[in-house]
Image 1 (tube, rainbow, N blue to C red):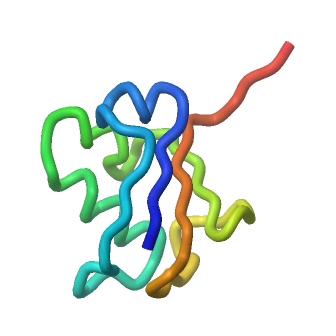
Image 2 (cartoon, rainbow, N blue to C red; image 1 turned 45 degrees about the vertical axis):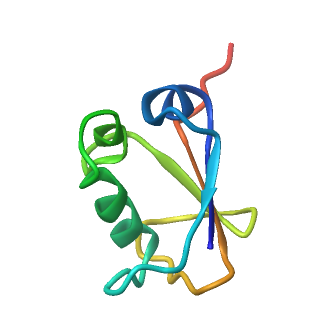
Length: 82
């Protein structure tokens, strides 16, 4: 799977993207966030309770969206406009 990080999340985790095999026990976008946040420090920007939006294969989704091998998941902070 490919995971993309945007804006302040990119800065917090220190990378723009990464590719890896879908970890065991990760079935949803929410599970993926928990898995990534468990990496520690900067990754806590993805922790539950943080205001983070997600897209799965370029479509906005909620935490309960199912993920599969080969998917692309993008995480980004909410965008505000004026």
